[in-house]
Length: 396
Ligand SMILES: Nc1ncnc2c1ncn2[C@@H]1O[C@H](COP(=O)(O)OP(=O)(O)OP(=O)(O)O)[C@@H](O)[C@H]1O
Ligand SMILES: [Mg+2]
Image (cartoon, rainbow, N blue to C red):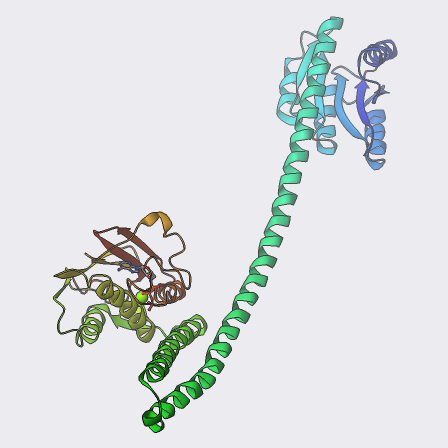
């Protein structure tokens, strides 16, 4: 870092020397006081100092000098050292000069000659304070910008690392799930043969145990299939078409409810649902997972009620699916869209905790958002948004 300097310019030698002495005796030692007798000398000093990396805090110039006057000098020096503060020493009749220096050199103050010692020192100290405050502020701003740039770089790096790790993990989940199926199939087959071929030789307790092995195998098959579906949706690129959400909701509910003849479920769609832009296969999976939950978690109700609503906002359509089921306490629900997160035990309601994670993956891929609201004993509402399709006003 270069030296801090003050430059005093006056054609009267006595005045400029007196000014220098005054400043040297009253300002901190680390500030170097330079003097010049005219504009040419002043330019040389400033240019030379800049080339050595020195900083000008302040330039004090007399207005009336032979050749270039003080206001013009300050305006020219302002181009070389814009951060330096400028003070003009004037007589009573130099209003035009002051005006010019204010407009062209960002004049800090003018001091009328002859000045009082206290006034001069006070003004110079104020100038030094102002310069230092600005310098600190600039330094802090520079640091903040640098930190911000570093932070942005780090975020980019981490995001790239994270998305690589996620991709690797998804590939791993897929491979593991896929490869787990074949030994599981063998266990299931052997159990099946044991039950079929050795049935006469086994007592009932052993037969029960082997049956249990088969039913556990069945559960694991289902879990693996769900995991495979999850990792496949994670990899899938949506094939976008116009999707009739009204038909998709009605058909999917029909498929889910068909085998549940004993259940009393009132399924309503408040107002015809619009079309959206999306991948019909993936969106069917979303609707199926949400409606399956609604059906599952209302099964203790004499009459289950599932209601679907929508609203249109700018370019997106928001869907909301409400049920009057068991609900849950929202306090513990922050990670519900993560894989294997459940609010109910296996003995209360069966499930793997993959359904909503799959929903979120798919909605994310469509550029939408998903959220859930629930109240224990009252019911649950799940909301998701999607970009509106060309037929978004079909229901109007
Ligand atoms: N409509 C709902 N009513 C009450 N609880 C719900 C509802 N939807 C989701 N939940 C809670 O969120 C959990 C996660 O749901 P998710 O669909 O991911 O898993 P799951 O239904 O348990 O299993 P599966 O992987 O078979 O779907 C559920 O276990 C349940 O606790
Ligand atoms: Mg589910």
